[in-house]
Length: 178
Image (cartoon, rainbow, N blue to C red; front, side, top):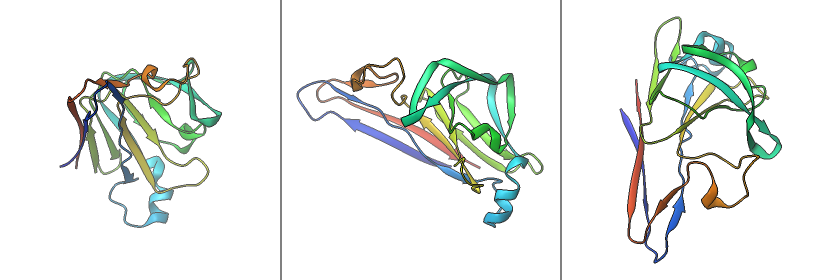
């Protein structure tokens, strides 16, 4: 597999706040080398989670603001989410209450795919451009969330932000495996 690690070091004399996240993208379906074929077969793919999940997707407001109080039901108590372009009409699928620590993106017809494991990261964003039929899907493990509608704009108050004391360091990783 491929491990991506982020190490944050506080070299200063005051506490420091930080967040990190990944933005890996994968052909969808995974084994397709031809972009047009991949774009045409996007609906052949699915996400498979480690545990049954419920997605009540928060609204994404203009400017990328996340409204956690207004959610759209996407699926309930399921491990498998069939992909379709309509899921991304409002931008990103944002999983804010995951039990799973890994997700697979598979071609449902062949079983080929990739797994992204994200122990130590609390959130998962799933994204593809909603304006075009792109031949890829991003599975993005995040430590924290972007600005939320109920936030005060102060970085240290954001959901998922972490704190390092002077001279401390912390590492977080995600792993991609076939």
